[in-house]
Length: 381
Image (cartoon, rainbow, N blue to C red; front, side):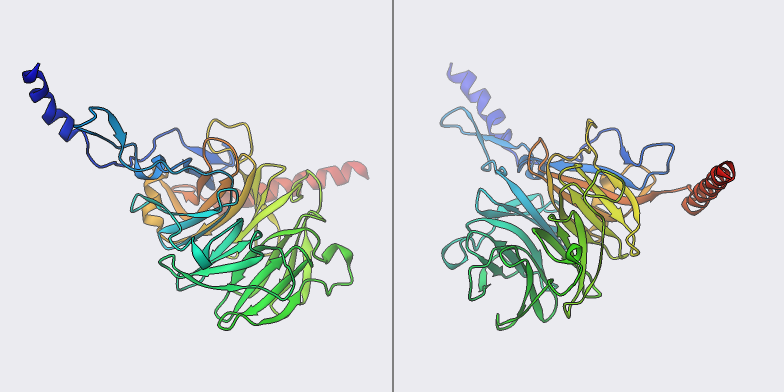
């Protein structure tokens, strides 16, 4: 018996190696489907820390049983997401915390400063500034809580009344807080936390006033796009509070919304809207014209399941390229939160397939559409 144990010890010792994360392999899932040229590919998904850190386990020589090398970290009810560099942050409303994930470093941790004055209660949406500081809208605290790039607590932003902050955006000088209590975007100075003004109620058109607004995005040009669940539309507001119009309406047609949630823009001025009712993401150009949608239900992989937050980034593309199909070159990475299902984060890539003349294809589509419309008009006459 002693000889058998001696022979087992080297095996047990070397089996406790560090976890590794392998690139997941599956048949490519593209949107739109063939024969239309692909523009979005589902790259991979994250359900818990094993999808980031790996499945590594070590064996205790004393208990002679396998023990998990790192504590399994899971989501309870995730909602918001934001990206900065190789990291992205996910708020968990029920767990009262924020996950900090770095796929390149195979790291999944909880926000370090989530205790004491930085303790979160019900974080819902979040964003970062150019320095990597994190801003979290917490409906439980009725404040926005700020942390530095290392996750240490910095300060809070709040108003004199009990606001309900459901989203936050920042630029170099200001912090914009979407307040569901007064249906306004509250503007604070970034340095001092002083409340300056409230935006979003100046339009004479009731369809362009904020009502049950849930999410927003701030563009590099200083425009705020606000998801207005009360009207099923997206409201556009400039930094001075002028309502510039809206697009979309309640419905199930193309460019319409059932329950708009997360909104995001990319570096090419394209605009993304998550619809929790249609369970997809709709993609628009800078003229508010619908380009495509993706993530729709019914697929073995790549479908969204009660989606909420979204983040779009063109940083760290070389890392994500390994998940793409051969020849599909990524332009943007799209991170979408699912509140239920196997994957709580779906990761997509916006790109183009080498060897396809996309402009020629789109011109052909428009020409055929024009001919069909002309034929229909002639028949009516």
